Image (cartoon, rainbow, N blue to C red; front, top):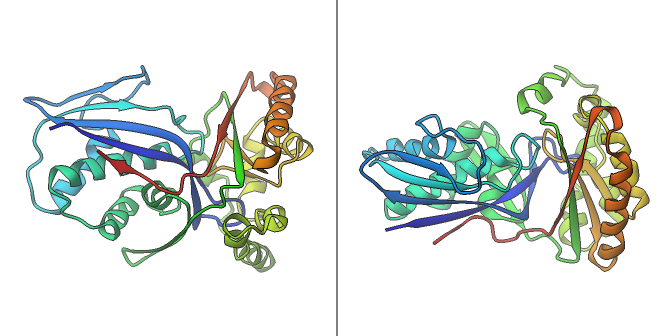
Amino acid sequence: MKIKVSVPATSANVGSGFDALGLAVTLYNTVTFEESDKLDISSADGTRIPRNESNLVYRSARVLFDRVGKKMPPLKIVQTNPIPMARGLGSSSACIIAGLLGANRMLGEILNTQELLTLATGIEGHPDNVAPALLGGLTSSVFEDGQVYSVKRDVDQSLCFAAVVPDYKLLTEAARAALPAQVPHKDAVYNLSRAALVPAAFCEGRHDLLAIATEDRLHQPYRLPLMPGAKEVFALAKDCGAKAVYVSGAGSTVMAVAERADAEAFYAGLQQGLEGLEGLDGCEAFTLLRLDADNVGATVE
């Protein structure tokens, strides 16, 4: 029996919701699983991935088998990975969710969605990517005492997204190392008040709130200096009509949000402007991904 899992890319933090908010978008990693006589891991699209037991898809599947006390059989795993790695679009979360869902299907859906989410968060360390990867939409999540509390809302389909992906990686570890150990109380309040507006802005048609809801003082000011060209991309996206612009996850991708009615002009202006930014501050090229919100989440066939 062949099992196929598709998992969407995710954009965490959404500006103000550091380590709490995330949303799923229409870019998908797919993984197929089959029982085999030996471990066989390969990439269908040529992406360089570990082909041994250190592979994150394999390790995540193994976690579930161990969790329920079952022996994991040798597997043939084939990955297709269009989600860019180490760019702030949830590539690791996609691998984790794929591994868990593949294993769960092999075991007859032995764990429910809440149990899968808790297991995924334990592997990843935070829920802001794994929650939307599993559930779709916009998720608000808390991880406390080994338990995940998460609420999912459907994102307004009249919004469209542009992921501006530079040609350099920004590892989550480096991005987190740039953050201060403490922040002023006023900065915490600044973010809390704005994060409270995010569901209305993205899910309830309050597009007038998109810009202010995604403002941030907790992480972006410290990470932007690590992202050559990002400030210029912020300015360009706003000039092209973006309603909101923020650092996706830990970076290096910048996510811009626009109204679908303006999508054609928005994408065209952004593409043209990005060509003028190539070579800026050591960034040789930008890739523009035209995306929508995914309100379904990961699927298993």
